Image (tube, rainbow, N blue to C red; front, side):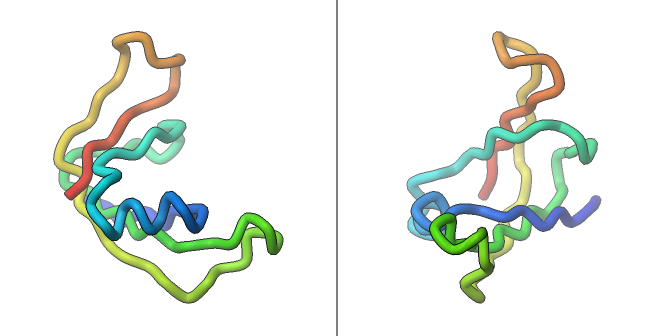
Length: 79
C-alpha cells in the first residue's frame, strides 16, 4: 500500500468531500493499486495552483484500465 499526494482543483476537491465524485482519472505514472491512499490536496487554479490548506484522504477500492481508456491512464474508484 502506498500514499499518493494529488493536487486537485477547488471545484473537484469539494465534489470529493461531498461524496459526489467517487472516482479519479489519472495517468498511471505511479503504479496505483487497490488499497493505496490518495491524499487530495486542494489547489487554486486561478492562483498558480497554490494549495489552499485543505486536504483529505481516500482509499482506492477499484482500478480500471483498458476499456477505451488511453494507454497509460487509469480510473480509480475511491471511498
